[in-house]
Length: 523
Image 1 (cartoon, one colour):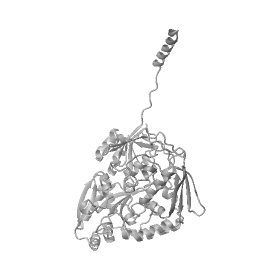
Image 2 (image 1 turned 135 degrees about the horizontal axis):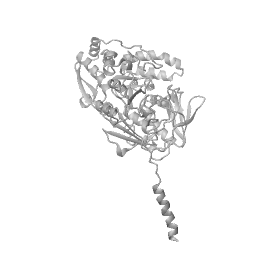
Image 3 (image 1 turned 180 degrees about the vertical axis):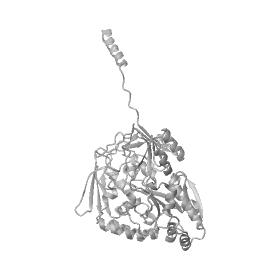
Image 4 (image 1 turned 90 degrees about the vertical axis):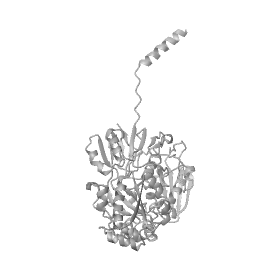
């Protein structure tokens, strides 16, 4: 009996072992060269692009902009607003989970919004009108306002510094302490055990992520993680990064120097694409906390140092990739495009006179030079050459961009690590309005690093946000920009288009205003 039962079983097992076994699907891994070393994991605490892009990989947002810069629901399923515009109620989509398996609740959203409102300029405007922000039930939260706020959805959907949603226990921590956990509900999960600061960050697909049903459109719609594994590689030497892309060691180069673009176009295996159709604006940021740049005249002096032709020639080179001139604080090509007040030609004698009127007597001026951001370094080089030409004693201090990003956030005295000037950039929808433009915020201690301080400009900005009529808001822009060219929260040095580069077996790259990694596939 035993043999009669076992022999057929063994025969079947033998046939099964001889039958062809389907090969497991190859893991889809994208290796991307990113522009900076990821050191800070708190997008609320620090506004650098690398931390912001990390946020979009790991977290999700309540709303997001489409390609028409219209706010669309993302984590939110539905919302209502009372007839008097004072009560807004939001209900989350079902099935949302954090990476640790916990459900996303309204309480998480409330805590995340409260944290974000402290630092973000649009969040600050919303907070000033807020009576209460409460969770109604597990899936619903409500905002009650003391006066209508017509930019509610634009505020919740802004792309540059969005209100990412964290677990309540994390978001409720002190705002002056960085978030160091990495528990989001976004399309990818960070592998903390494989994070190598200064070298590599690893993410894997979130198996519990529930994308929206709509197709992806800019930052809105379905965020489908098609990759099994995403690796960010930090390669500070641009030539090494270019070689790695050419040989196929990496698949994607997020921010290649502009003079590499022509080389890439001659390579049949490499493609390039502009992911931000509005473009990038670089800027010089003075520190308004210390002399001489606590004086408007010293900041005005920076406007007269060099022409945008000088900066664009150094940063971009190819005239097809930059605008001839853009004096708009809110991006040329946007609804708020104007050159009112802009300085068209450099005047070194005027710059020197303005610095003297501001009280400058030859003190050293600390300028931060990023060693791993060629575009920023080129702008710094032009600026420093012109400063020295008018007799400024420049103390050029070099560091990698992530180190500069940490240093710039501190108000240390100049002799204890403080600074006077650095160069950064921004672009897209976020830079196109007075309230969403992070570097334009002139609300003194509540402003971003550099702490631009001009109560008059801040009042004009608040008045713009209070105006419900779009046409009337548009008519207010010339007066706002005229004042901005008096107090100079920053100096626009030019607007250009920054392509990404990739191996041609990489598909699905989105024109989302910034590099994003959902929807990307690899053959």
